[in-house]
Amino acid sequence: MQKNNLLDDFKLRCVDCVKYASPCGYGFTDEIAKIFYEYYGESAKFTNKYGDKYE
Image (cartoon, rainbow, N blue to C red; front, top):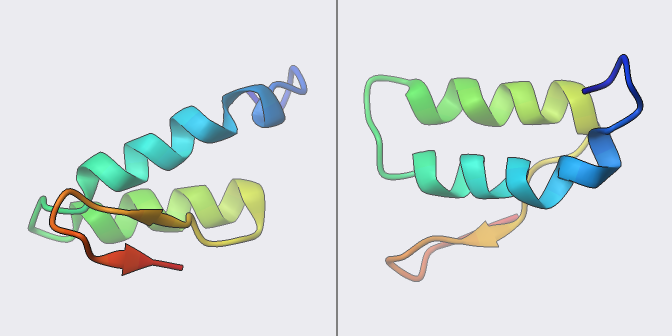
């Protein structure tokens, strides 16, 4: 996506990936959040299905 300058087009979908990974265990959530930060330079901001806010 970065190579083809599509990061901005897919940002909301990437936030959803981090959001839907939030209830997973075994460090999966942390890895997905780290990848998001690598590409976007910021943390994903969302509220999960339990009402927990991540900013």
